[in-house]
Image (cartoon, protein in one colour):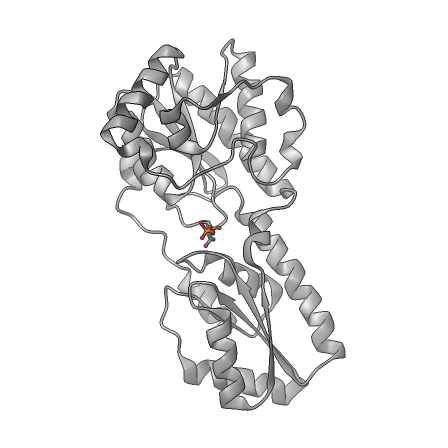
Length: 299
Ligand code: F6P
């Protein structure tokens, strides 16, 4: 998100426009919490998180919040808004502002990568962190076997991160909330791997629960289970090259789109290129889990 802020600011400046920051998401817009951007954006593309902070507040949607939001936009002479956010921000936030008559462009930013028709900024960095930990666990497994290792990833109610990490990192099994867990299949495969080489690794999405899966595996197989929970560290850290590339491409496109009069769209990355996606195209849609990849991991 910081990379988006920096590159969007620079693009806007190049086009003779001022980009100002809104602190704390939609509620910041309603509360009039603005941040002047200038030299303070230089070099921030290297940092995880966002200097603008985020919130999950709903004040902006109240009658009072809405009135105040409109007043703030008018007073500041704001001509358009760029929304950096996840699934809810794209599906609800962008149409909300557009319905109030404000040209709005969304940029998909969520490690969960659960927004349809795009890759989201943050996913690659989050997966890299998962892969790094999986590699470290493998070093341990090879030198300290007779254990089953469970790695729990973030992802909320989705399993895209867990699946990508399990596939790319060569885990033995993956559990995702979108697909019903086949206990018999999982226990059989893990047991087989422990027999074959002394250890096994199971990647579990937080929406399934690493502790729950680990406890059951230990009970069923009588083998020590060691659980690593990535937790909120997965949301942070220096962004990968891929995420910075995406952030620059999408934020520059967002500025161009607003200047060209686009209204209620998301700029996304699809089929290896930048796309302008009308927001109705993602409303009510869900990004499906990749079942083929799931079968490749689990056998
Ligand atoms: O939606 C992104 C995400 O990082 C999820 O993967 C995770 O479950 C959640 O946010 C963590 O945020 P909170 O602490 O609010 O649950």
